[in-house]
Image: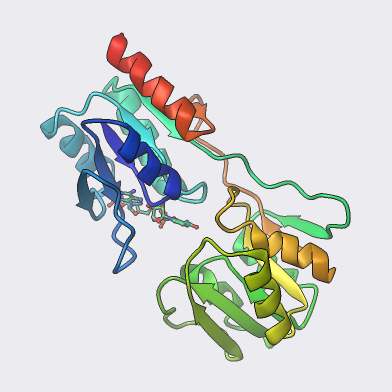
Length: 237
Ligand code: NAP
C-alpha cells in the first residue's frame, strides 16, 4: 500500500494500517514523519511513479495529499488507472461560512491577490504562493513552515510556524499586527480552522481560494476511518 502524504490524515492512516509505505514530497526540511516506512521526494512525473509502483509491487494507492496538491493527485489518478491499481483519494470536507462571516470565494491565489479588501492582510496560502502578492503595496503578514524566498512583497512580516493553532493564538496574532483581512485556501480540517473563527470574532473579511477539482472518475473518501475501510475492502477482495 502506498499512501501519498503531507497531511495529518496521511500520518494517521499510516499509524492505523500495516504494510504501508508513506510518500512525502520533501518540501519541508523537518517534516512530521508518519510511522513505518517512508520515502521522500518526487517520483519524476507519471513515468517515474509508474516504475516506482511496479518495482515496489504496490497493490493499492491512497492519495492523502493536501486538497491543493493537484498535480500529484492528477498523476496518481492517471497512472493507477492505466495500471489497474486500486486508487482512492482521501479528501477532508472543505470549510463553510457561518452566520456573521464575510467570505469572498476566488478560484486561485492570483485572483485573491487581485481582490484584496483591505490594506493589512494576513496570508496563510503558503510560502510558494507569495510571489502572487509581490507587486502589491499592501502590508502583509505571512505564516509558513519554511522561510519564503523571493519574489515576495516589499512590506512583509513573516511568522514561521505550523498548526495546529488555537483561536486565542490567532486572535492575539491578528491583534498584534492590526490585521484587516485574511487570505486562505479552503484546506478544510481542524488543524488550521481557528483563523476563521478569529476572523469572524474580529469581523474581518476572508478571501478564500476554492479547491481545484478532482480528476474525473476517481473514488473518494472523506475521513481516515473511511479510508481504512476502503483498504480493508481491497485486502479482502
Ligand atoms: P503538487 O503541486 O500536487 O505536486 C508537485 C510535485 O511534487 C508532484 O508532481 C510530485 O513530483 C511531488 N509530490 C507532491 N506530493 C508528493 C508526495 N506526497 N510524495 C512524493 N512526491 C510528491 O503538490 P504541492 O501542492 O507542491 O504539495 C507538496 C506536498 O505538500 C504534498 O505532499 C502535499 O500533501 C503537501 N501540502 C501541500 C499544501 C498545499 O497548499 N499545496 C499544503 C500542505 C501540505 P513528481 O511529479 O516528481 O512525482
